[in-house]
Image: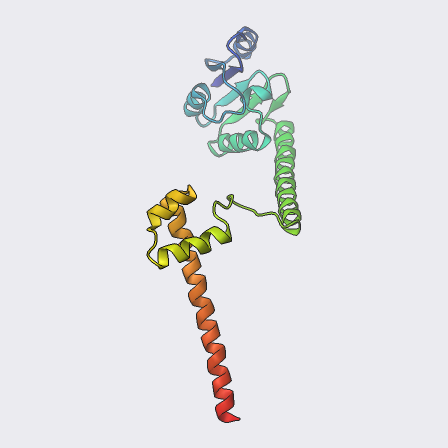
Length: 209
């Protein structure tokens, strides 16, 4: 059985052209999405079409971009149909996965999608390395600087302010300040242990000297 799927991106567009082509192609059922972008993954009509397609069936669209705008999404969807032992046909593009030529086209598209992912990953890594060389902070913006944290440690440690009070003064969430103080305490304790170890080593050297 041939199952059609049609989509338009805006409310003022109509589905007549696609519906005529799908009916002419012999689709027994046609599901639609009206006013939905091809970038959107969650589409009611497409979900219904994919649920209806079973082994031996063929999902048919008027044009490949009616199915989606992302190459990786298209490849994943076609792979799903293949795993479900169903076929895919794009009328305007002359693609039919039930034929040898159609399968070859999607093997090539799969390779291109993998190449695209590799390029994006490579550009991301290069961008992060360049940012680090410029001394740019990566990740979430730092809400408290070193001077503010040191001041908070002093005020809270001496009992002049509570954590909540300092958080209000610094205009940050109490949890944010608490985490910062906790990290500072761990760092301080680690430095103290290192200094103690150095002193013990010096003392031992003197004793053996």
